[in-house]
Amino acid sequence: MTPFQLIKADLFRYTAQYSFSALIKNLLNSNCGFKYMFWFRLCLSKNYIVRFTAQFMHRHLSIKYQIQIPKETKIGPGLYLGHATSIVINSTAVIGKNCNLSQFTTIGSNYGQAAVIGDNVYIGPNVCVVEHVLIGNCAAIGAGSVVVKNVLDNCTVVGNPARVISDKQEGIFIVNPFEGDH
Image 1: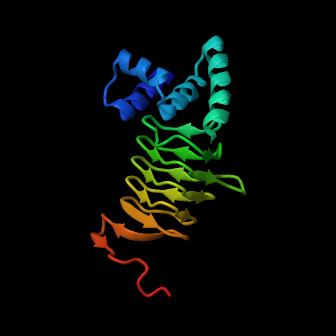
Image 2: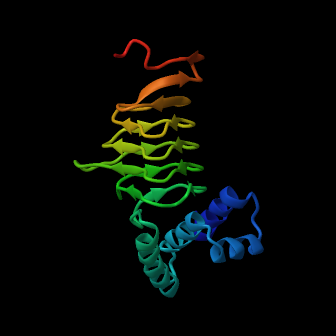
Image 3: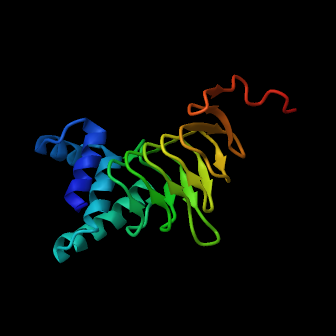
């Protein structure tokens, strides 16, 4: 996909429309997440002047919003950065399309490869995804979770370490995931 197709998909996630006026409004107003992703996407431009300007703005907004997403990170279309602050992602992470990342999210690795995140994944606030784990499509990770193991498709996980509390695929819904833990 071209940078402009990616920007269009991101804009739709924020505004549910593709208009030029919505683009300008979100760039000029205080929509930090979209503004950051706009310049992040333009870092892939083939035009030297656009790419140079985008890299400058990406660096500036990284400091301003405390977001560290290296421009080499592979991110699918339609990324939504909720509250857009204090997000740290390793450059080896792969993020699918239409994902939500909340504030204070860390996706990292000490040993090389970071997580691979599927499509339509919701990651709540203050979540750490550690090392090379696979997070399936349509998964949800609850606030404050630490993910150290793979998460299957359609599962909801919470806790430290993260445990499955519901699996829509199997029809399992756990009422109290902490029952029996003392």
